[in-house]
Image (cartoon, rainbow, N blue to C red):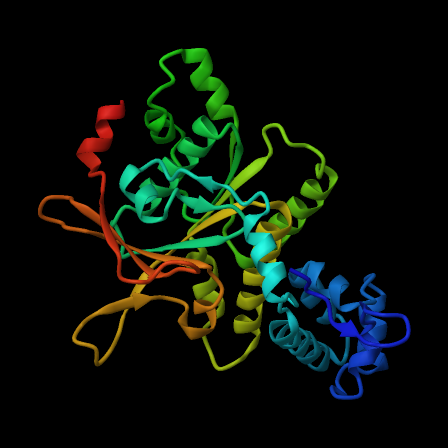
Length: 336
């Protein structure tokens, strides 16, 4: 995905300097550009990759802080509108066929439903109410990728729910203790408690991945964010647009990482009540976020017998509504 602002001219498509935006957006004036330049931000791409929390903090030191913050918010809104892939149908088909392998979720039913599992290069969102088993599903997937696909996994934990012991229990075939330790060493966990730490983590990850472009053995294959809604919900309050713009910027940064480095990304999201719809629930984060994930799955659990089902809410190549039963908590214990 190319998140640049194209400028068409004799020199072809180039990265847009900020000054090219002033004509239609007067707030991107010389004062705002000078402020950005003092922090090494000369282009739109520089802005997208910068530490936004730090940038906002620096703006507080200026007498025109409110105007600078307004400029930051506008830039994020422009990124939301312009960050679209410029690909024709043939390019999309070639990209789909190019090294985009399916990674097992660790559950045979879900793998069958998804025709193999998570697709590299795509964002899969798992939606479900509290205690439906989303975190267990994520840990099961992490164990499966580390063990069966010989890949590295990065687990971003936003709620202090990661359990190395539980993941170890999912590694069923590793009866050899040394082999089990080897598999566990491929899984890294980082705690991320706010949106700005998330930006820092993803930007740092992008730098690392770019330096490892030619590394194929034990490369990063799965990125888990459990949960994305815990990070985004706190910034969406109020009538301002900055929280929404930050949400979209995170979404496109995740898409960029998935696409450019052939990573499968698994995120969890909670559900909220849908007023006027007979008490039904729907995924949180609203209509704007709805377009971010390539695949949306709904996880539900029958509290009486702990049976779990997963249904497709959205998929790039399959119809929605298909449902499959997954392993129950008791059945998963057979792997211990």
